[in-house]
Image 1 (tube, rainbow, N blue to C red):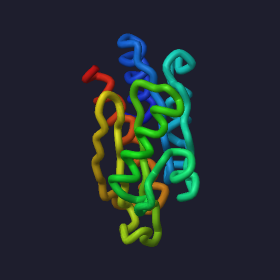
Image 2: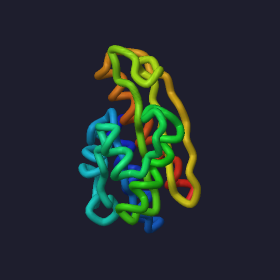
Image 3: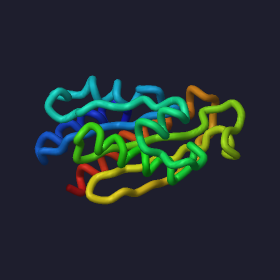
Length: 153
C-alpha cells in the first residue's frame, strides 16, 4: 500500500474507534503530518504534530532526556511527549539518520520509531538508499505502525 492508501485506512479506523492521533517528527520534518492532514476527515481525529528537528527542541519541548537523539530512549520520549502536549490517544515518533553520513554513532538509514497509546513501544529499522529513499521508507513505516496500533484498539 502507498502512503495515501495507508492514511485513508487509518482515517477510517481511528474515526470508527474514536481515537485521536499526533506525531513527533525529526528526520521526516513534517512529512508524516502532511500525509495525515491529507487523509479523509483529518480535522476530526488528527491533533497535529511537532517537528523537532534540532536536539534542543527534542529536549525542551518533547522531554527527551540527555541521550543521543537517534536512540530508542529518544523515540519513546518523543512519542510520550507529543501525546501529552497534544492530548492524543495515539502517536508515532520518528528519529533517525537520513544520510549521507552517520550521526550519534548511528549509520545513515538508521531510524527509531515509537508508538504511544496505553503503552509505549519502540522499534528500529535500517533502511537502504539515498536520503530521499530513507525518508520515503520512514514515512511509510510510521503510517503502518499507526495503522497497526489503531487496529489493536
